[in-house]
Length: 332
Image 1 (spheres, rainbow, N blue to C red):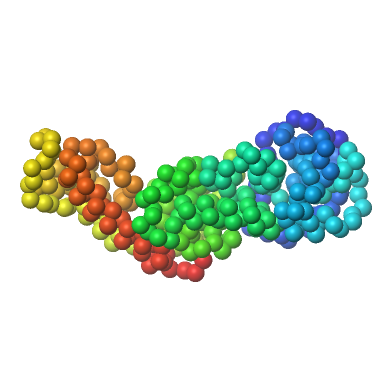
Image 2: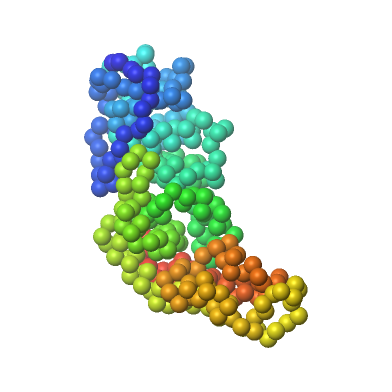
């Protein structure tokens, strides 16, 4: 069995229609003509070699795998006949190489793994495979971060916006999160809020899907896309406009400081062409506070506080309906 030290970019991910648990190759030690060693997950004193999809090899420690995962412990306890590699037992796994790399990095390069700094692709891989291989510590850590980013309490949504934006920074990542929620039967608030994020995307981007780093694209299936479109119609016809009513707020003129503040005797939507365009379209999802700072910039602190309180109340009402399943009715 020959090994190439150079690691090319990981191969394409298997189609999501395949069930990784149904692959009959897990645990076999079938000979391989050429394997590539992972650059960092190849420890010279390792005592077991995991091969992902017969392409990429990882030399790691059997004891760590057995302690962390009951599935790996059972798999490694079975005596298999096959060709060893560098004196180590070889275990073939059907998993996507990049996904297995993310999981093993979290296990064996623990000092450099911070779940709150993960991008969606890394977090999804760790959650998916920690579920498959029964690694409760990593699974719980990943779930806690997802629940933080997509809270069941709508009042917390604003406070977690920065972490949520960083997690879903890759274009279309919300599509991947919807599919992950369906695949792993995650809590309903995560799935519902992921669908909401999809509804805020331009239709073309939603149809184009989520392009992963391995070059493959993930899309919503027809049934889920239908749910998304029906929910979007509900949001556009009812919730978006209600949540944007803060632009229509008026108050008697108060003594503003500075005096250049336009005051609230005339509504924001009547003063600002941008606000008028956003409000009249009805298709604009109520965004995080920072998206409106150019509209709010002329107002004094008192007027801005009034507007932000109104905006927050409307947005919380909308998000509560999303979380509770009123917009996307279905049991996840």
